[in-house]
Amino acid sequence: MERTFKLANQAHIATQSNQNPNEKVENFSDLIIRQISIDKLNEEPKKLNPNAKNNSKIDKNPHESLSQLFLKPLMKPKEGQDIKPGAEFPCKKEHILELATECCSILAAQPIIIKEIRPPVKIIGDLFGQYPDLMRFFDIWKAPSDAGDIHAYDYIFLGNYVDKGHWSLETVCLLFALKLKYPRQIMLLRGNHEDKNVNKHLGFGDECAQRLGEDINDPNSVFAKINEAFESMPLAAIVTDRQQKIFCCHGGIGPTMQDIEAIEQISRPIEIKLGSDNSENH
Image 1 (cartoon, rainbow, N blue to C red):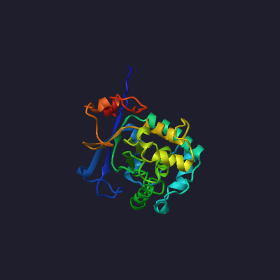
Image 2 (image 1 turned 45 degrees about the horizontal axis):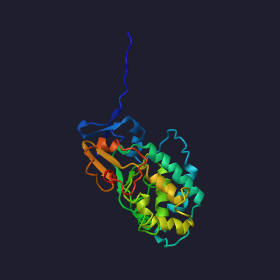
Image 3 (image 1 turned 120 degrees about the vertical axis):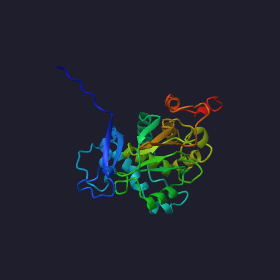
């Protein structure tokens, strides 16, 4: 007799509350039961015990060397708070172009709405090129690094990474490098300033022209390539904790969007064309 087996796409995890994990469970009512997707199961040990050693085989990140070219000079939670306006950007233009290209591919491969994110998670709003503020946040509440809390927390950034501040390049390059190194734990959503028609005039364009000495109208410029990555960013994320769900996006939903499925039908890359009557959808 032939038997048919089906693999479940969900798993149930039981964890003890307020008990030593090495003690025998006497009262099963103290267990916390959670449901997670199978593809998140391999991340469960680091969520339950971030200090535990993981002896499982870890595939080498193909972007490790590229991400380190930016993480080493930019991930400085203490020193970075003292950066001065007009400081020389520490990374080479050709490396920024490669970073933007690789990050664009990773962002485009993610769904337009990132689901199945569960606590603990840190959610960070507008940065607007304020790199020192981001470093202050990492200094006070720990940073997404191997020495920090990336193995215990996911991170959701809600957009508006550039413009207004003096350090849009530092901010966006650091976030792109973190996305390359930790693609499953770092979520970068798109805000309204992740649009070349906006950031060309509100700070990022001028910064690229002055600090990198480039023509931002050149389709092969850093300005153009970073904006290409912006156009492939996911628009929203959903954090799920038991029966509760939190919908995360930058600044609301257009009046024509009536449900999640409508957002999922939007195709990327999304290039906002001035004068388009579809702009309210995005």
